[in-house]
Image (cartoon, rainbow, N blue to C red):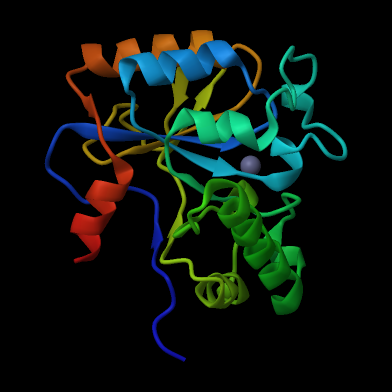
Length: 212
Ligand SMILES: [Zn+2]
């Protein structure tokens, strides 16, 4: 069967660098896009089709936003950053069999390839839930790495650490969402990271190095 894709939740590096990843895609605030473009901030997006296309029930955390589904896929094209795979409908993968998992992952990869011109190499399972079938399905859909995260970022730019020392570490992967107030929260977060002496890394470049 060959090797399954590795599951990674931080990047092995001794450099003082952390990585920003942003999930789903409900709230498509043009102000946030301008911020990323102007400051050339490296981010990686894990796009979920139903969020990007504003289909079905909106995530409660994204309701009330002014820009839910405002730009569709073109919003993400204009960001000019890697758009990776986060399923079609955001299921808990552990509740699905192999075929249904594969339909979610391959379907999302096809949608992204069609709109972005590039096939995703990274997959992030919703809620971080996966099993061996997820890894097998991801491999068959051309995924190289299953990427989880080290810490999530709460409203206000507050980092919810999962480590007891409550500090940033070299190689940490931070998770944010396309939610209302992302623009403001992101500014707070980026300033905080810089004040602590960390740079923002390009995830693809560091992954290439780590996988070599
Ligand atoms: Zn998600």
